[in-house]
Image (cartoon, rainbow, N blue to C red; front, side, top):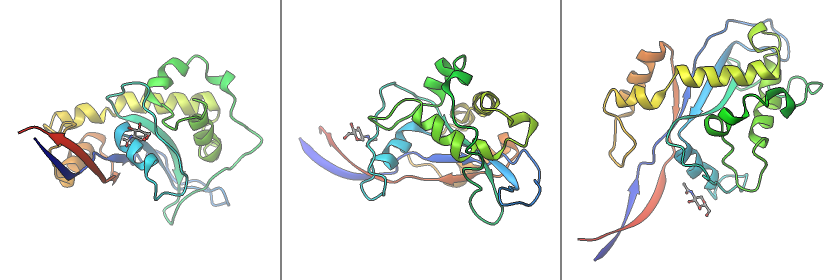
Length: 205
Ligand SMILES: *[C@@H]1O[C@H](CO)[C@@H](O)[C@H](O)[C@H]1NC(C)=O
């Protein structure tokens, strides 16, 4: 019986950059493109638990979710982040999305322990959703969340990667191969964020 401590490349956290809308007028809330972001929940959990990060949150995975889940839809600028929190006159209202909640519980889960399940949705809406109200396709809360769910169905990274024999495991894969698989499917440039974790485990031999 031996105990090994190994560094394991914990699976990633991908931002699928789907630049599906064009330039918007210049103003303080102007943006150039929209980023659609999905995450691999276990990797997102490692990031949430990271004691070096400033937020001091703890991750919980109450559901066994073995799929890429939605992070958000983010209006973005070419020259940096944002805009953020564009319209505080339109606060998050759970009543607008009651018919989506059952699906969102699985496809858009909040992973932070001790917080309401709606807190992640509320955060994405107020920080990002309110910045895209000027688009007909995203001009209310229900459309914003429905769009996230539709994109999640369309961009099923788990299957896209499985088609290239890239599966959730302790195998190391080349970032370039993952990128190629997703970019050729989405026909978009993507941005990937990898989360590294030190994992200790026992093995019998
Ligand atoms: C995050 O921390 C919680 C509480 O310590 C633990 O139960 C969970 O397994 C951790 N998850 C990961 C992926 O590190």
